[in-house]
Picture: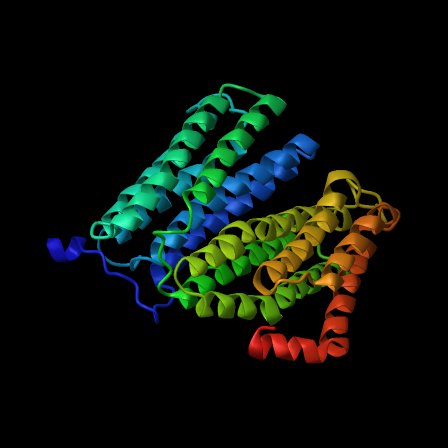
Length: 400
């Protein structure tokens, strides 16, 4: 019995386990639900609600990514904590459509969402305290960082009884306490013994988010007839998503992992916290916003009964598409600033150009808008690949 309950410390060569990948499947479903939530509420408030839901999901996912880099997630009590968290996160995902406004009949979903979030944090706390049984410094920092999270979850429960912008403000307050609380707890005591595993976990979640954007391309039009224009727009959408993949994994991912690996002690923890826990949130949020924009763009192209031929994407979906890509590019530049000390100027400029061109893009048919955004990203990749080839090679090989 004691053998089955034991926790196995992670060593430097540890890699991602199949249980961690299994856990990510629930996260995929939750992201899909979030895109649907925003799609059904195409207002500024609805968009903001989707963003804060992403922040909650991200914090839950990160908590177990950190646990899995401290003790093996597929052994002992950590395995049961992860499986229990999966069950609770599934309930969180199921309640996302009602996270802000309860549907008639059944359980009161906004409160259930908050209770499930609290349970996820408590399961994480229990597993981490078990991992820190013989490590006073780790136990201390876990307690200091979890207390604000529990407080935030309780505030989130109070938000269940509010509505509109007031409810959103309470959500932001709850998340702010949680996010700032972890930061205030400091780096000392946390452990990142396997930087390769840690970087791989976050790289995989970026792929998962990109995969959701591909799913969004097809799900919204699955009951509509295929046409040449639909096929072309979907292919352009895939090109757009592939560009985002290349821009992250071509250089950024390897440089960030190298910086994490060469750092030691508290410096490594600060790199892990800044580059991955915090800066990957806007990265994933940008992909989710893109997924929303692509979902609506394909619908405009595929449904001539609801949208006239050549209809232009406008309003929230239009800004979600271009703004999501701009947020992604800006975050990649911020990652370079954190890891190498300098901004990626061409990616910041491209983000600014996309935002500046967005009002003009509203004049184009939805398919042409997708093509225009994809063309901008392809031009950026070509510039980095051929004009900045020497700098890119140095970054990949040496990290400078």
